[in-house]
Length: 150
Ligand code: HEC
Image 1 (cartoon, protein in one colour):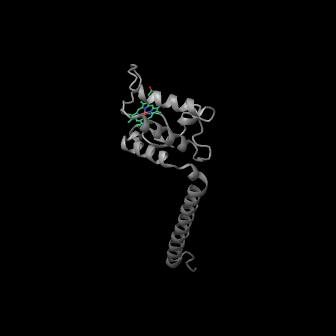
Image 2: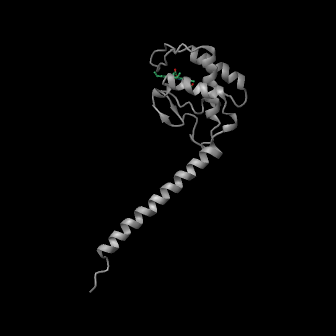
Image 3: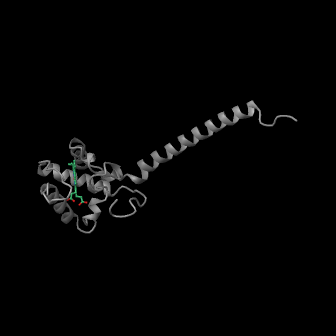
């Protein structure tokens, strides 16, 4: 009886499988890239304020406690949708004022509640941060997070 599964066949499956999944990986990477650049990111509204806000975000390492679109630490609330949660879609000015007031009033000092430090940000930095958070909230995340809490 001839051997049906030969070494050569095993090798071909290995190489063929590797090539197939490598090509698939590249195709999915290209697809994600194109989706991010053309569909999910709102590049029209990407202005200098948003860029400065992202810088404030990075300089103060907000990500050490918060998640942004699911990435980051799980100590404090998800902020990718905070603009929407604060009613920004209906009342942009109200959401801005509330977010700034919130950040300025930290730490709350409420016992048993997790605390956020006072970063002593100036008006420009606070407004830029809100511009950044507003911009992030408009990223098309395809329905993620599934609930408000992120
Ligand atoms: C040391 C951890 C820590 C860091 C760093 C931190 N935060 Fe927070 N943040 C918190 C905690 C904890 C809360 C929730 C506090 C509460 O509910 O009383 C919070 C809440 C918030 C909220 C309100 C969220 C909501 O859902 O109501 C905003 C907005 C916010 N943080 C923005 C920022 C920004 C912007 C930065 C960076 C400049 C930052 N945070 C850095 C801990 C942190």
